[in-house]
Amino acid sequence: MDAQHDDTGNAARPVLEAPDIARVLTRIAHEIVERAKGADDVVLLGIPTRGVFLARRLADKLEQITGRKTPVGSLDITMYRDDLRLRPARALARTEIPGEGIEGSLVVLVDDVLFSGRTIRAALDALGDIGRPRAVQLAVLVDRGHRELPIRADYVGKNLPTSLRETVKVQLAEEDGRDAVLLGVKQAAPADPR
Amino acid sequence: MKRHLISAADLTRDDAVLILDTAEEMARVADRPIKKLPTLRGRTVVNLFFEDSTRTRISFEAAAKRLSADVINFSAKGSSVSKGESLKDTALTLEAMGADAVVIRHGASGAPYRLATSGWIDGAVVNAGDGTHEHPTQALLDAFTVRRRLVGPEAGLGRDLEGRRITIVGDILHSRVARSNVHLLTTLGAHVTLVAPPTLVPVGVEQWPCDVSYSLDDVLATSDAVMMLRVQRERMNAAYFPTEREYSRRYGLDGERMAKMPEHAVVMHPGPMVRGMEITAEVADSDRCTVVEQVANGVSIRMAVLYLLLGGADTALSAAPARTEENK
Image 1 (cartoon, rainbow over the protein chains, first blue to last red):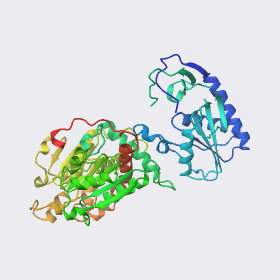
Image 2 (cartoon, chains in turn red, brown):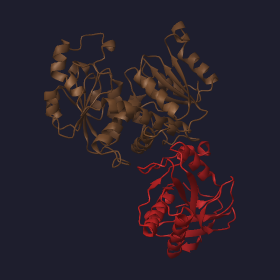
Image 3 (spheres, helix red, strand yellow):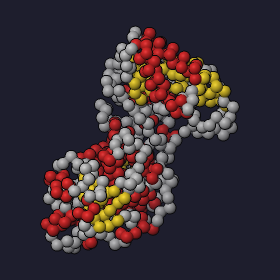
Image 4 (tube, helix red, strand yellow):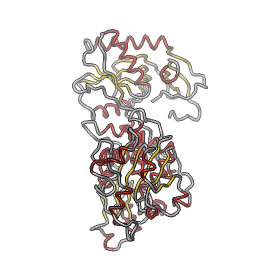
């Protein structure tokens, strides 16, 4: 949600650089294996756009740890948003459920920034229409606080206390050409992220 | 702001590609155990059908229901329209019931345009076929089918139909499908050739952005898709060709003619087919014929159109270009 991809014209300060992000993802992968006792039935579902790239990276790390392939897919939540009526209809992103399905598995949702929690609420609704997992967990790269719903993450890359006047921007090599988490200040006339 | 879908000519290339890409995602919902999305919950879609139609109405109904909209079917037969109610009074009734979108099919060309521009209703108007004018969602699903078959469902995303050659054969004169397809396919970069007996080609066709041929055999070998149209007997009040047998000999598609088409080329038909007239059973049942696929794709396309027109605060389609006299 908060991963704005306008150019970093204003003084946005990097809080995580590429090596930090790599370390954080390695740690989360280990935590998933530990919590899931081997991660046999884990399915990683990324929330487009950047959550999908993070999910794929996590899948690679999990494979290095367990030696097995972890199913990875994407879950588009556009049609389940609660703010659809507030903005023009948006283009849809891809939902790709791995062939094995999610029935009875441990689904780990992956997103870049956890903020209001509304995206995750929508993701849980979307998941319910696709199948019934054994359990659902949430992994995020950055938790910036300001929750508006009773939702928390199971795996957090970095807790980043922010004010509502600040912006958090995640850049990933797949989409933006480099890895970084940037903390900036909202411009006087806030540009719409999308 | 473009709030209605009246004519395929109103769509820009980017609009059309956005609709096709959205339909591609909608198509995936059909593979899920729960084929329903909550997106249009609480919205009301009225199917206002002044002309008989089974597949278009069912297709719109299925599309609206998969998006969780409430659907009201209104057909002229057995309604107050048969008692002499005007389009205006019907529209005001629907407005009073709180219709968010009206899907209209009408025998008179221009009825949807009148409904959209009259100020009688606030909702979005979707043209589901008006007279011999346009049938834009049919053109969209045809373009979608061509893109899926010739480019591929995955590879096609974001792509148009640049350089594809599409031939439309049959009753062009009475066909709203042909007119919408010429506009849309041309916008998407395809090259359209119309094939019909001279009596079934409309006046003014030289201003359409397409070629016209009177011989089907001449164009088959260079076609990537051949779209067969039904001869609309119900609209024929004069003799447009000597006999049905002569028509199907010259303009019907049989196995022999299909063999002349390139290996990858597909045969399309908007339905309903008249087997033995414009298409033989051999062609209709072959796997190069996309008729059944077109029906399934129709639901996806109509879901995409309803979502893009009703899903957000504003429509996602760009502002309408200045309407030209020709498509008014």
